[in-house]
Image (cartoon, rainbow, N blue to C red; front, side, top):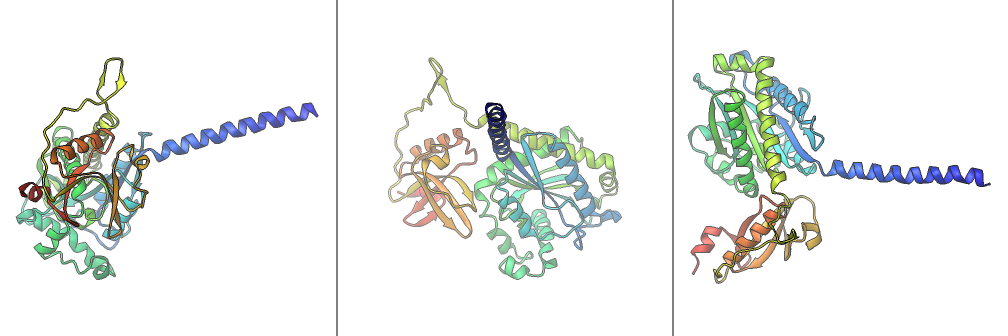
Length: 370
């Protein structure tokens, strides 16, 4: 009896250790930095075909190259909106990223113009829809007309209307700052790594990044309508070079976030203490300030333990999105300190919001109040 029980005990112990290992591996996977890569257009939506080059094919090849390079990093999980020549509706691309609770959304495209314009551009969501920026937004947004239920999915949105494009800029407001950080890194890498001409960072109201609940950018890797640039982007070498620049920018962005998350100022015998400067109160009567720390399609209990120990957690529902706040004060200087605390705890995109009664107002408007 003893001889048979020992192997059973050993088996049970090994099974227990194995389950712990599996759980640890699963937990590690869940903690990975999630990047959703979106190859523009696809299927019956060819995108532009400047000089006979196919935007949908070039965008896909560059996207797959970026993903292949990022997948070598064990701390990063890559999700693709498409890996083949298929048509994906614009709103579904955002849904893929939101369901994955992604940390970044990067949509890759090729540009077009009636002239021999050249150079890269990286867009973040915004209301600056003048001139060339509006033309880009209009062209990219017109893809919705290829969708069967575009009136239902986009609530009558008209890509030709500047008023429609202005209205969609507000929804991603919480992530614009971090989106700009990534966009700048991408354009800087196009210049320094890929040795390409950059037209810079731009803001436009683009539907594909309207409903994403994370920092999001749309990258135009160059103009297919430019004779030289179109030919370059249609080569394997050109696609690899552009993909490498985007990959490096994403890794730099993640590295910068990693350095900021959980950082503390240590004094004496390395105690975990943050020393804050005493600041005179700046009370704005009739206004309540809060710090928006996150937005998600998931409903969480508004409890401190769900938000890394931050206090005075509140939640509100806006459409299908839950917004989470920390703090509640009429003191603007205090809420700025709360914002810094949130950033130190890993919520690097945290920003101040203001309410007058039940109505949300801009912080600028709030500060003008007597």
